[in-house]
Structures are given as structure tokens and as C-alpha cells.
Length: 314
Image 1 (cartoon, rainbow, N blue to C red):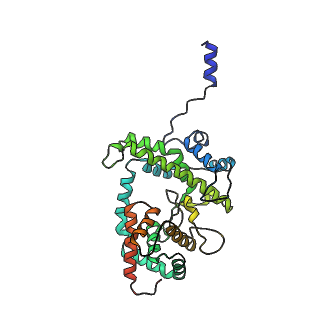
Image 2 (image 1 turned 135 degrees about the vertical axis):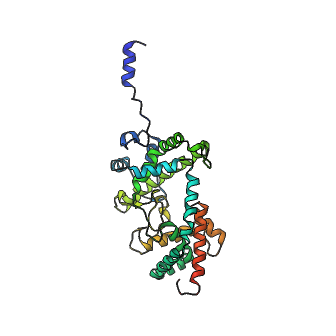
Image 3 (image 1 turned 90 degrees about the horizontal axis):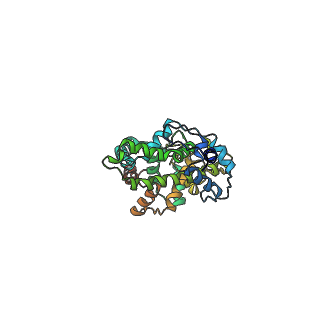
């Protein structure tokens, strides 16, 4: 190869992209070179069963990406999730707060909520044949009856996962997390991270379509570090089960009627049968597979029902 040919090859070849780390500021340019972006682009070009009939274009995605702001809080959660210790820590976290979820204060708050929304709960319970105490168990575990719904901008959450999950895993590896007791192996952690990335794609696609359908700003949706929204922390990819509980023609999961109706419908659609312990727990598990979470909802419902006794609360 001549010198001139070699120079021409070097000039025409793309510059080697630097490896993204958790310290790399988010930029649309490098994000568009990632598998996460390519998966997201493919998703918005296809039909989405979560929000059917709403068409998105690459221009819609570009407009959203231009507004993404990813800060330390989002990155910290990505790092925690990418770690092979994530599942162990999550189980321990739920286990550590289970006594709080089942405390007298939470039972009292549930009774106050049931009294304040008695007519609504009775109507939803009758419509979907879901026990009120099970709905209260969900409300308790997910948001402490609406008091903890999260302040993250969910669009930023999903893009942060798509952009930084691999960087988070590399950081965990360098930190020695794989050598810790209870850690997943690298071969076990890799498909878990891939599932999270695909889930982030589904959720980002859903939130963009939902915003377009109802003419809302996609960056107006607030939720948890994982992108869950409202009283019972629905993921946007679960919007196919969302219901308009107050009949205003709009689903807003930060309102009690819509959240309660949506939760009841979700449970029924996932096999819930009133009074059937196995079916109930399976539906709770579909909502969140954490065994401690499932047990906490079941125990709360049992204790609430026993505490309520012969009262007229629905």
C-alpha cells in the first residue's frame, strides 16, 4: 500500500469511539452509536401493543433525545442495577422494610385511605371482583398510599439505562462485585442486563406514544428510579392495563380512581381470583417477582382484613 493510499484510508476511517463510562456526559452523538439507540429506533418504527394506533417517527425520538438530562441520581441507580449483587441487595432491601410495611402505622393509614375512598373501592371491588384488602396491600407496598410516588423524570430514567448499563457493569466488575458472596456470575448477569435494556426500550416507546396520544409532554411524567408511575407504580410498558377510573376520558395514574381501577384490572388480567391464595400470589408476582414483596402484600391484606373485623369499611 502506498503512503498516499494509507493516508487516505486513515482520513476516511471513523475515529475510534472512546469507551463510555459512568463519568461520560450524555450526548446524543455517542448514544446514537449504541445498541440501545438502535433497539429504540427499531421499536418506535413498529407497532406497540402497549399504546396501539399511535405512530412515532425518528424525528419524534430525536426531539426527545435532545431534551434528555441524565444526572448523578440516575447514574447511581444504573450502577446499582447493573451490579451482579443487585438481586441480593433488592431482596435484602424489601426484607429490611417488611416490618414497616406491616406496621400498625401502615395499617392505620390503610384504614384512613379505605374510609376516604370507600365508595370508589367498593365500586372497583365489585366491578373486578378484587378484594379491597388486596388493593390496599398493593397501594401500601408500592407508594405508601400515594405519599411516595417518586420525583425522577421517567424518560431520563429509561435513556440512562439504555446508555449506561454496560458502563455500570464494567464499573461493578472493576470494583470486584463479582467476587462478593451472593453475586451472580458474569454469565448469569449478562442476560439480566439485556432484559433490563429491552424493558427500557419498551417503556421509552410506551411513554413517547402515551404522551403523543394525549398531547402531553413526555418529560412531564414523574416516577421512581426505575420509571414506575403513580399510586401503584405502573411501568409505562404496562399501560395496556391502565383504566380510566373516574371517566374523564384520560388515564392519570397519579390519581386515586385511575390507579385503583388500573391495579384491579391488571391483577385480574394476570390470573387473580378472589379468595384463591395461589392465584392471588401469582398475580402479585406478575406485578413484581420479588418473593418478599409478594409476601408483604399478602400479609398486609390478611392483617388488614383481620383488623377490620366487622366494620363497614368495604
